[in-house]
Image (cartoon, rainbow, N blue to C red; front, top):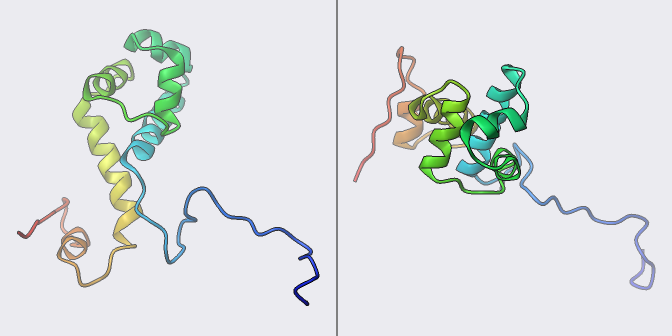
Length: 130
């Protein structure tokens, strides 16, 4: 192709990194929290309106949280979790589990965190070094 010719197709640039791509970044906490909330709500067969009313937050705001568009406060997350019959600790544990699944395989094998998370023990172990 010469410089005067136009390409036959446009180059597509993804808005978010493609999972598994070498330069993919770790997912954002708000994205994972939102996905967990939505998954729990749908598993219960509940509508966005029902959960928002029970949590006493606006339906558009809960929708934004579920889509990872808003960084919710701990009070709002606790209210949404309670509306789903969960405690805040349950929501955080589910989110932590999802985040761990997505990021452990992406971490370099030599890091202390990745080694601790890959331990075959019955519970997660995370060790932080200063």
